[in-house]
Picture: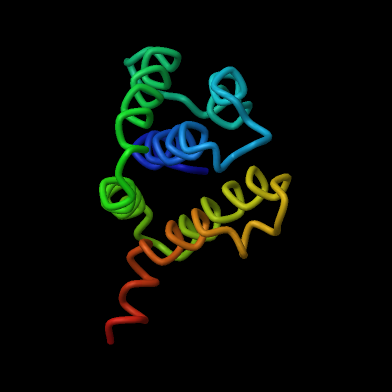
Length: 125
């Protein structure tokens, strides 16, 4: 089960994917109604307002590949344990799997996985 900061990071990454039209099976309403988010949301901040803010930010970030990559790396940084990384990768892969290619072959998925802290450690040293 994800922590609230991890759940928020997942929402942020999915919002960016929706705005970048990477996630073709999920639109903005689909993100708002995602069962995982609905079940696990534990913040005082309203879930719908948080998602709307994430979508607004996502729309701003899609104009720059560099800003998108930086944002994905920043949000991926909250998944510090191997189990948390496995869980988020499984969720992201499931959501992206309906696109025209396997999630693991997807540039957006690859960017996220490469941004995870344990992935960086294995690459860097």
